[in-house]
Length: 227
Image (cartoon, rainbow, N blue to C red; front, side):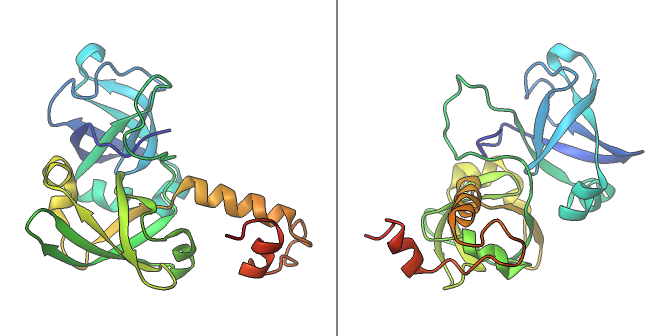
C-alpha cells in the first residue's frame, strides 16, 4: 500500500523479464531489501535484486508481468529510458499524507491540456476508457503516474477531469515533464471501487453474472444512502 507522495526520482532501463530502476540520488529510498515493494509511476513492483549497496541502494531490478505491461506505460517508458516517480511501501506507523494507493493501475489516460496559473498548474486529463469516470467526482482522489492528486472538477460522467498541481509537487515529480497528448497511468480511488463492489453484492441479482441492475439514486435512497 502507498500514499501517492513521491519520495524519489529514478530512471528506467528495460531488462529481460522486467526493468531496472536507477535512482538519481543513491539511498533516496532508504535501505532496500529483496521482496520490498516500490511504486514506480504508480505501479507496485517487487524488488528482485538490489543495485549497489543495500544500505544506500543505487536502484533495483524488478520482474514485470504481462498484465502490468498491458495495463500501464511501464514497458514503453523503460524502452525509452524515462524518468519515473518512486515511493516505498507505506508503514503502518507512517502518516497518510496523500490517499490510499494500491499501486495497481486501472488504466491509461491522456493529458488534454496544461495551463500555468499564478499559484499552480492546471492539468486537464481524460480516461482512455470512459467507464472509469464513474469513480471520479469533485474533490475525490486520483493517482496520476503514482502522484496523489485531488480532482478539482470533472465532466458529468467523470471521464474527463482536471487537477491543480502545486509547485512543490510539480518540481518534485515527473509531472513537470508531461505535455498535452502524453499518456499517463491512472489509478482510481480504492475506496470508491470497494464501495461499488459491496453495494453490488447487496442488490437483487448482484451475485449473478449479467443480472446486476443499475445503481440508481432511487435504489441508494431505499438502502438508506439518501440525504
